[in-house]
Length: 236
Ligand code: ATP
Image (tube, rainbow, N blue to C red; front, side, top):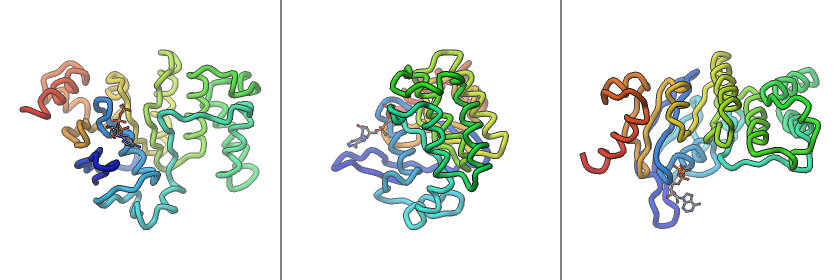
């Protein structure tokens, strides 16, 4: 697919196929096109050309069907600051729950994922950046989407909270969910992702399983692979 903002071509060639049940990571330098790609897949932006199918539904003609199956955590999302954390989770659950029992299960799951325990009783306006992020991750995953699209899910989280969130994401796929995420944290993508794509200047320049990429580049970690691919993608 391709996408321009005015005369600037942000996505030049993005081709990817994500398997159900996998954790797929997009990595790339600032401005490479990761968020633009995620926003298109979440039906928030329209591609200029190309065809996109999500669970068999066409992105342009069946966007409503797709929206029922996905949950999107934006990079810079906020929650309603005047609500308490628990009221925010309940507010969201009301939109998605089939019945009262399902509503309570969803909220309970959100409480557990957030890890915020008693602080859920206080207003979101009093939360730190990391606490807000955990609330939003809870919101994104508690509704059990078929596909969770997470833009830099652990940004702003301390080491322990980031680990918790990574474990939550892994758990989510064990229960049948699929995850597409972006990250600048190479340790994170190596730990989490079944496959990754490196995007540079609006193009996918490399795709593979972290282990395979490390082998191919004779690298000891994904940071080395990243550096080498980005260095080479314009010139080699
Ligand atoms: P980062 O890692 O910094 O979050 P990214 O890979 O997510 O970057 P995008 O946010 O997708 O990158 O941006 C890709 C390119 O498109 C950048 O050059 C950016 O300036 C441009 N861009 C993004 N949104 C807009 C917009 N609304 N209007 C104009 N240009 C935009």
